[in-house]
Length: 352
Image: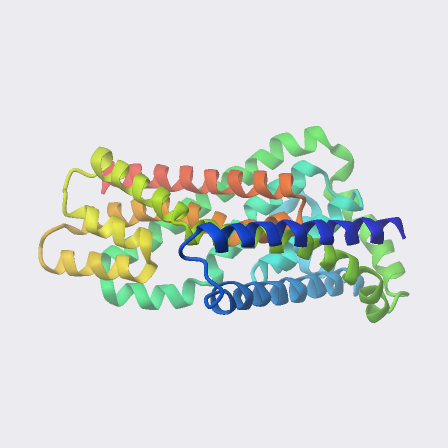
């Protein structure tokens, strides 16, 4: 009862904050108008909440039906080496289909003290590997005709960066996670998994969803709505565009000697497909080489993607996890991603 009251108070507080932020936006931000709210805020927010709800249902279904060990077995050798266990491995497998479901599973395991905070963070970082493939088919077949060899090299380098950081995360888990929490290794995970799977089958899935889903979804809504609204108002005010413009000019002036490459970086920072189209046009005109195009696209990735991640993923991270945990997890994950791309880009620039 107390937990339901806390969730209710959090929801009320979130709605009050949302009203204040939205009112301030309507009063002082030119791009925020009543006519634009349905298409720019209400519909995207409703769609996000619907996908979050579906993700929570899937995560609960996987846990209650005893599929955790089945999914965990698919990547078990790697996660056994990393001292992360079958539960983290199951979340990794789920991330190939839904990042929300994977994060919800990790949070449940953490709250039930089946994994540690370090295992939670590390698995979330490793889950960037399956997340890479979620939108790859669409983007790959759009980008390749526009940039051909340069686009292929770009995807190869970003994939290698993903592999490098995943390998390093696994090594970190092998040497540091087990030393910190030896009681949470795979052996304990598997033995506990059988008993837990048997006991959970006694509770029907629908009953479990009825008992747990409303409270979890209420808590997510309490954080997602105000954060998403705040991000929308900041976007309409031009805050994120200003950051991207500053970072783009800094990158062009300090790292890219060819002035023509600024067009590529600026286009990529503002719109995904336009950047590749601009790169292809400049390359076909002979203004820039294939190598310069690849470096420019990598720079655009480094500049644009962290800003987009904060803009689009921050509400979900803060809603599923706590605000502090979600923010730190997202910032750390993007930091590792940028560092790995800088590394492979530097190697390519030297050896390419």
